[in-house]
Image 1 (cartoon, helix red, strand yellow):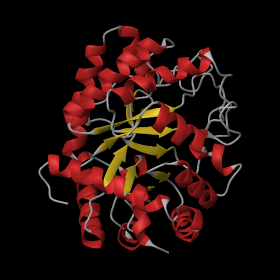
Image 2: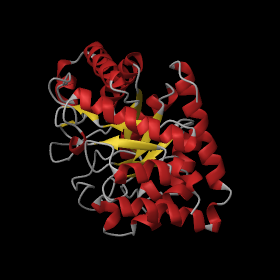
Image 3: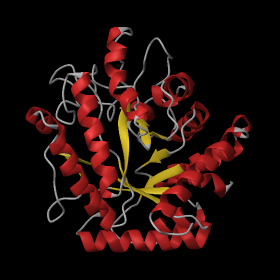
Image 4: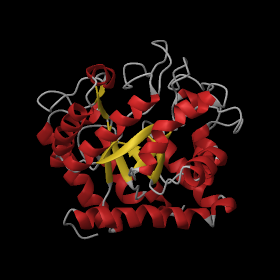
Length: 328
């Protein structure tokens, strides 16, 4: 197993402290990032201490800091709660009709996240839900793609001003789905105008230079019979080449039902890496991280892909930490 490919993984930790499992993931497997959930959070001081301990372990093991991510969208999806500043849902912001309100709120949240050592907010949501039956209804700004794009760009501006890196999600759009990808694999709407409706906010975010894009577990029939998250067409051809995305590309969690009901997690990780992802999320079961890292190390088809991907990840780490006054 080659631990240098650990830089491609962002993983969940079991609890609120640096325990032996967390140390194994960070020091032995040398993962490139961690993602925080409510099981990792008691109060702000404890979160800051956990992040400091994880960063110290990462620097000692590999010489590179960790990406530290959280889902702090607002509304129903925000891992840090009071006394941390909370936000209303994206749907609520959309109803106000003023993107400047989103920018101000995102800047406040971004600054608070950065004060804890968190570097990435997995937001904003750029899905364009067709109706309230869509699982993304409350998490999205609007059913109008132009409004979603405008409010998404406002949120991106705010998070950057607050000092955290935004990741737009869930490319290429879950707005026409009614099946939650946490449970099983949804199918996107037919192509043409419906596809463009979903893609428009991502096109605007990529054109604005968004740091990262998260790819959804959704089948786009005219592209591939595999989920977009495992599809070279979706990632390399559409997102990278057609839209011109030069930032980091993240999978959604590879343990969600949309993947686990159809693929082994290690198999999905190799397919996602081959498709062109930079960051592979495995959020729950730590044994899946080791199995996926081993699978990447042994796959001859990835020998040329993985060094390029690792170099892109490390280059962006150097640029980010240099801009924040820390040597890497």
